[in-house]
Image (tube, rainbow, N blue to C red; front, side, top):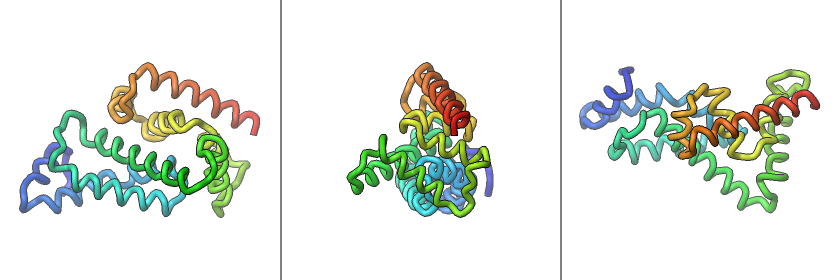
Length: 182
């Protein structure tokens, strides 16, 4: 039962097709959401935990979803908020500031990956992204990896398109500098 989002939402609201519609929504979006989350929290296990929390929230909130925005925008907003909540919990558990030494912890997680090779551009890109402030990191990931239009990103992050364009521009410049000098 694949389909467009409107059909899936209609099917979700009917008792006899609710479970199948939810399963179809998960199948349609889980990989995109997983990678969005993974780029924010870095570790695979953490990304899976956050994704599971996202789908629990989606299940609980889908009946009252007003369709003011597209379904994927709503899903990305939940995934982003859950990722940020997870990172905040990590900050509180740690005595370290996530913005300063916290990005170092995420960098160390990347370097600890058995496939890590600093000579490869994709690894240098991941290290560069982890050096960015949280908001720039999110904006860069949504635009660069998910190719999300600024208008949709504005709805997901509740920020003006102009501010998002500026954040992306600053992030891209910082990443470019990092990759040149690494």
